[in-house]
Amino acid sequence: MIDVQSIDAIAQRLANAVPPGLAQAREDLAENFRDVLAQGLRRLDLVTREEFDVQRQVLARTRERVEQCEQRIAELEARLAENGR
Image (cartoon, rainbow, N blue to C red; front, side, top):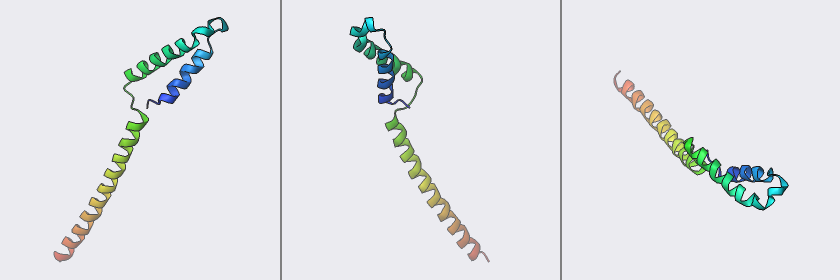
């Protein structure tokens, strides 16, 4: 998952590691680090936290629906077996 805050934190840590003589360029470097990190992560075909959460909700609803269907099928099978006697 791509977490923008994590990318920003990593980029800031990299920028802070820049030698003191290049302190003026820190903000530019931080921005460049952010861009490079984000681009690299996009190539990995990762999903955002938001996309992950949406899919988790979809899965939870689907799982609930499957459980309801399984219960209904079991009830119908029981009724069918009862009527078949």
